[in-house]
Length: 257
Figure 1 (spheres, rainbow, N blue to C red):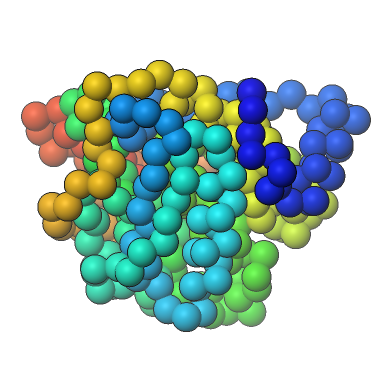
Figure 2: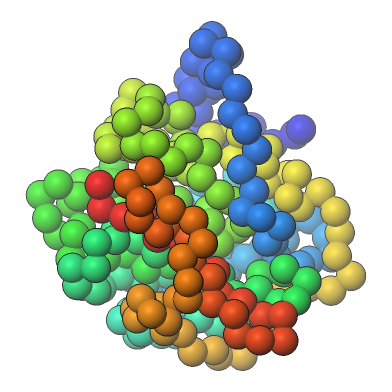
């Protein structure tokens, strides 16, 4: 599988070397069969910037990281939603930050899907109630959560969900220490490989780049539907809300450790 390797970070090559040396084998991690419909690769996905200046650099960095994939690019554009409501827009991902309160979560990623399991829109919410505290107000935690939540909206699941396991060197890994070793602040080669598998086929239609505004109730825990998967601490990390007619809203929650 071929990537844009001439642009990859030096740190990524270090991660690859460690993986080869210790012989780590990581299972596939697609988020079910959810993916954006598109007729050709690479496709370009817009990330609506509804974040404050404290988050702009992390959003830009995460966008650059995921754009290293050979099958997609992400582009940061001006957002059209208030950060608190974080309304999604069809064909795009809205990225927002605000003081959402003592909810217990650092970040939330949500996607809407149609009857074909194609992603039609997405949102990422970053909770400043916790990121303004000493524990989480660090570049490493901000990079990890921004990177992971955007990765979910591309169709990726976690690589590992046990925070006490050794870091896998990817933002799609749970951890209690994002700095590592290994650093969990960016995607790794397996993430890019998984995206190639997810988007290996072509679709006859596209769900990317539509322009109809849709509402969302992600700030209301009851509004995200029933819990369908728990983490090792018994907390619901994956929720599903059935909208009828084959349409659903699926939400990942990144809980405070």
